[in-house]
Image 1 (spheres, rainbow, N blue to C red):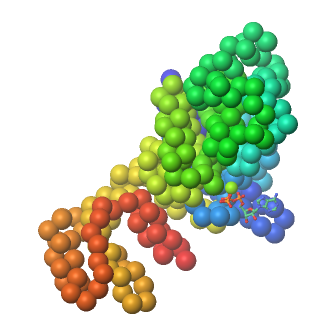
Image 2: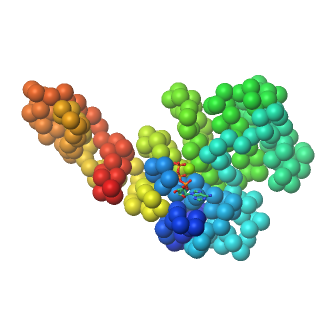
Image 3: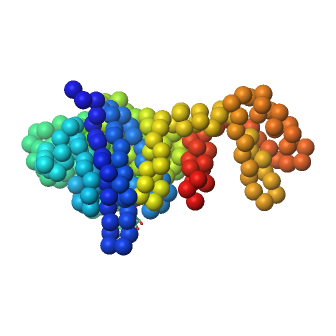
Length: 283
Ligand SMILES: Nc1ncnc2c1ncn2[C@@H]1O[C@H](COP(=O)(O)OP(=O)(O)OP(=O)(O)O)[C@@H](O)[C@H]1O
Ligand SMILES: [Mg+2]
């Protein structure tokens, strides 16, 4: 049995004059959480929409659990759940009604729909809000409904497009543990984000995507290790300069050197540091 859940080969997407994807390739292992991390307009949503079958690529191949997506479109849809970047729930309907409609669209039996709704409300800690209209829920709760809606038909691959965009840090962390929970239940996840700490916390592996090209793929740990363990920030009059060190002693030496005349700080290296290095390289 192959360990690969999703294989994307040389995906190109052109929108008339805009080339949104310039031939991207990556693989996601079963039960892995893989993140596409990139700035606005990098091509994250385009990638997700192509994999979900919502738009066709100009060229390229996609294999889901070893089968071509395009030779098995109906089966593929049953294996994939998508959480779009923009909340597209029916605002006038209740939480339960939104989930019910999704179940009917996927041709689940009424008894199975009822069972799934009750399991998922439990998982998302939304039991008390079952009869609330979507428009009455906070942004964080709406996001949670959006995620469990995508899980109604038990997809093996979940696509999460910016699942915490616009949420405050506390709610974002709640959604993070919810996502970890879903992964722990055996679901493979492809997530897009432009939040560095989100990718660092959630992802087993991360791809850096810039203007339709994947520039690097690695585990957050290895991205960080390439730079060092310790970062020294020096606040110069016109800019912030960061130095990286493997050894704490070396970092402390540098800190001391600058501390006489500048504000300085010592901290651990983060995925954001690694990402910024690639941004510099690609500007
Ligand atoms: N329907 C469309 N028609 C024309 N151009 C499009 C369309 N959808 C996306 N694009 C363009 O393709 C590129 C990639 O867009 P995409 O939405 O995939 O980026 P993204 O990484 O998801 O960005 P964001 O972080 O802002 O969500 C952008 O230049 C965008 O303007
Ligand atoms: Mg997007």
